[in-house]
Amino acid sequence: MIITIVGGGSTFTPGIVKSIALRREELDVTEIRLFDQDKERQDKVAVVVDWILHEELKCGIKLTTTTDAETAYTDASFIFAQMRVGKYAMREQDEKISLRHGCVGQETCGCGGMAYGMRTIFPMMQVIDDADKYARPDHWILNYSNPASIVSEACRKLRPNARIINICDMPIAIIDVVAAAMEISDKKNIVYDYFGLNHFGWFTSIEYKGKDLMPALRKYIKEQEILLPAAYLKDKTALSANSTSNANRHSKGSWYYVWKGIYEIMENFPEMLPNTYLNYYLQQKEFVEHSDVNHTRANEVMESREKNLFDGIDRYLATGEIDENVFYAGSHGDWIADLAIALKNDTKARFLVITENRGAIPNMPYDAMVEVPAYIGKNGPEVITQGPIPLFQQGLMMQQLNSEKLLVEGCIEGSYEKVLQAFTLNKTVPSMNVAKAILDDMIEANKGYWPELK
Ligand code: NAD
Ligand code: G6P
Ligand code: MN
Image 1 (tube, rainbow, N blue to C red):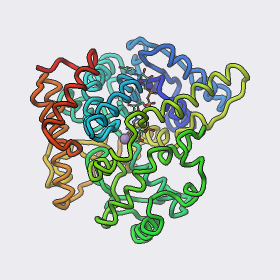
Image 2: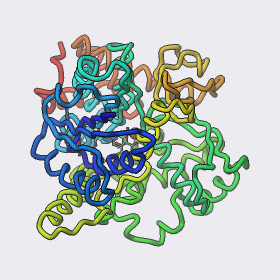
Image 3: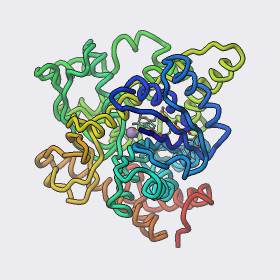
Image 4: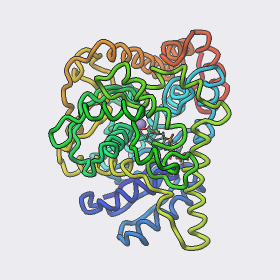
């Protein structure tokens, strides 16, 4: 059984490989292939991957690294995709161009997310077509490549029969934080309900061993004035952007504000637990105020996760010593590997996935790509029906959904007007003229990545 990782040079590759290797019996995996366009970067990452497979875990899984699509996909059963089209250099542009115009500058939300989406749609179709051509007919593509919401809408529209499931690690990262805050060690006993679009959703219930956790959680968030475990708040390295450990990465550096933002949102709307990403839409002005246009999250990541990994590899090559903290990926790797197990072994385990609505949320369009719980078996997700959602959430979701749909249509048709409508409709943008100014700067910065807009 072959698993191919697209974006083999990603900072998350070693952590994902470790999660796969720890599950090698359930997955029956014999070979892992790394595929990337950047040979030099991938070859470096492969050093630590080789160490994990053959030194640390001493397992017989074969490792192949390639920049050739046919070699990468031939006979693969699973394709785990995690490309960053344009890499951190373009993430930095996405964030900084938006901020320069006074708007939220974020990897996947607002104008930055839309710019990243315009770069990623066609490379993602290439992955689907190559997998279709070379991989096993019953292959599955599990996609983390962002912006997952826009990517999933493009997949639905352009390749409706593709064997792809788009996923996100944020809800599970939130559950990890909830577990730590509530001092729960066996987080597998936490069951939750959730609805939304990707990076745009709400937990409607969280239970631990059948007991409602929401009252205790609301009390905790109100008392702490933040949703972060008390232990992290006392420990500076758990919050420092420059910490050399990748553990608890979602609490580090500027991530702090979104956990604070959960408290702020719940002061007004206490019923549901919002995804951290809702801050960019509900507190857009405040986000811009505490952002530094000269130093954004892209800079933090380049100075920490990326630097630590590549310095760690150089150190290993020079001294033979390795520090696992530099590639730790925790739930991020476990989630995708567990999803593959559910598909392969038809377990019907419950996962949150991004999937076509088809009536699961009756007051959202049939064809909306929503993020909801589903049972996962060999034929893919069996979505759990949610029932109608309240007007506030539905209104926010419709605005965001239509912005994303217009973006995908505009990208496919090469329509400047539709892309401008997408930017104008987005809740992070205050006026049509600001939308136009950002779009024009984004077109300039994305030359060679975006289709031409007329
Ligand atoms: P990274 O830049 O370290 O790695 C991305 C790799 O993708 C690079 O090695 C790059 O060369 C490669 N790449 C770019 N375009 C490619 C193409 N067309 N074909 C093959 N490879 C290509 O980035 P990272 O921070 O490790 O993140 C990787 C991806 O995972 C990003 O898209 C990020 O947004 C995503 N991510 C998603 C989630 C989620 O919840 N969905 C969580 C974490 C990360
Ligand atoms: C979460 C989200 C991802 C996003 C990542 C960014 O995990 O679910 O979709 O890519 O955060 O994290 P970073 O550390 O790169 O800012
Ligand atoms: Mn995500």
